[in-house]
Amino acid sequence: MAGGIHPTAIVDPAARLAGGVAVGPYSVIGPGVEIGESTVVGPHVVIQGPTRIGRDNRIHQFASVGADPQDKKFAGEDTLLQIGDRNTIREFTTINRGTVQDGGITRIGHDNWIMAYVHIAHDCTVGNHCIFANAASLAGHVRVDDWVILGGFSLIHQFCQVGAHAFTSMGSVINRDVPPYVTVAGPFAEPKGINSEGLKRRGFDSARIMSIKRGFKTLYKSGLPLAEARAQLASAAEDAPDLRLMLDFIDRSERSLIR
Image 1: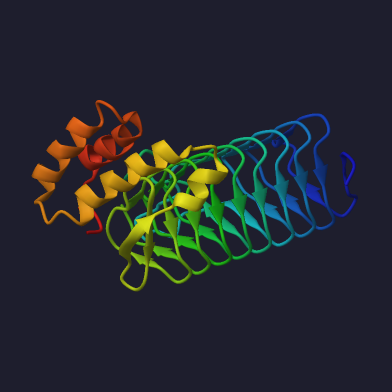
Image 2: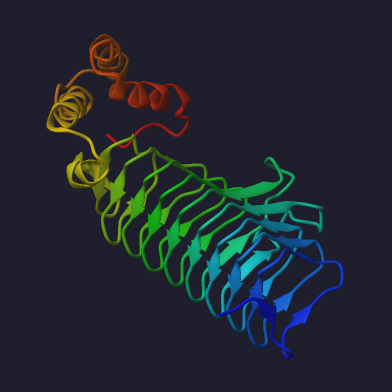
């Protein structure tokens, strides 16, 4: 779709659209919405503000972006949705703004692939290069780091965190924090190994992957209490810096780890 606003679209005068933005038939862009250069909004999309969307995004038909949070405490406060650059948001995706009970903002980073029927609730933070398969759902206050893949129909409980390079299989139900690199599966999800295939695709060589596998065994196969496993990971990280992601994640975890 070339840049331009279809005559059937409704764009509020208080919305700010940069050059090259395309808005398809019957879409509605509300006040307080900012859209960056060359972003394409398909037909029948609703974008409510305050919402800031970067450049070169593709938002497909029937998506709802920037709607009020689904939180009974919400009382019309001025909260925000912020979306970065080069994201693909497919059909019927719903992404809500934040709440004042948290930081007041929902954040989506760059280069994410968000498939149909995905829900990203209020106050979530999504990093970069993530893939959310169809109908994956994030409850409120969830944090998902870079390069995470969520399998179709994965469900993440509020306040949970998913570390970088993690992978959830189809239908996973996440009720605790998933450390970096780890693959989980099942309702409720359990650790199954590391996301070695994903790491290979991202250029991790065999030595780095092996060090991460050893870290996984320390955390999940050694039988050590978490504090002792963390101490062993800290020692191993001196020669395997990739393990520092695991250490930092353990230190910030609040809901406890999937173990």
